[in-house]
Length: 334
Image (cartoon, rainbow, N blue to C red; front, side, top):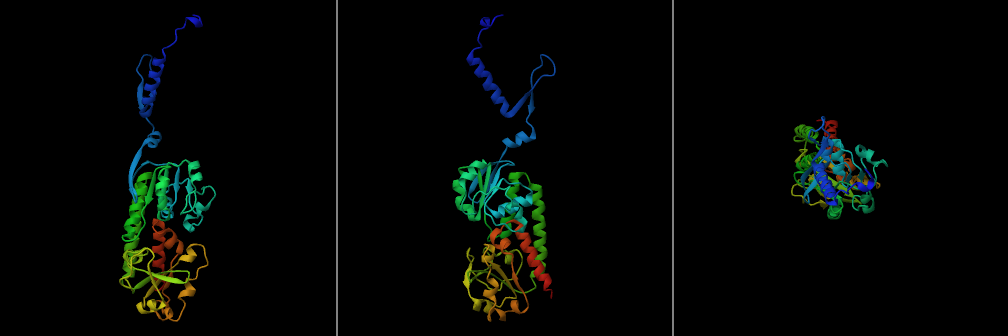
């Protein structure tokens, strides 16, 4: 038969076939029949393909977001979230900032592209990365709205009152997204057990005061505050009742520390956490503070500033902070 004898297939029929195949392709793929004349058999998508289409609805600090289940291109703007993802065994595609504590040091490698600072995203870099999930929290929470217009975004809540409960909830939330629930249970159980053991020691070893030093100024923090975890979850009895639970603590002087006379003085050097020359030891080494029980007994504990101040609510960071406090009490055993 010549080419001119072939009758053209109607265009509408062609479009109909394409549409049907496209619809079927969303849910199943066609497997060729094993015998001539047999009908095509519908075969379920592979687990990998199904995972790409699955989603999970997540409640977070700024609302509810539908995100891909087990996303592959994840950008993280919060160090606490990065800490948790590392503990869960989740890989990320980009990070913010350039200062990482020891356990997060691998993220300083150039293979993790910088997406801006903890405060200011690099939107050009983010668009180029084509993320399928963005995670904000703490210092980057203010950028949630603008980032959520680029890709599904979740905002990790900060700790304060009920600090450990917040750490646990954040760990479980991120585990839900990445299908790491079993690992999360393991991490949470380990943390709670270690905290219960620490409380057995701290409860009977005297009262403590938590202070932050920056720029020569001193602030004190009590239960319900940013660093209240030492009292509420580590079990250190309070040396100064009635302190404000504000984010920045309550401004105090050396006279206050001498008056409260803590058995333990826990110090966070903010300047050191920001890579500046720390001056907390010089500020506190004065005639008034030297009169306290904490000073005379050698029970002034300089907490790791990166774990205590910069990261805060990461499950690894809080575990390391707990370990540091436990070691301090062990070194000064009664």
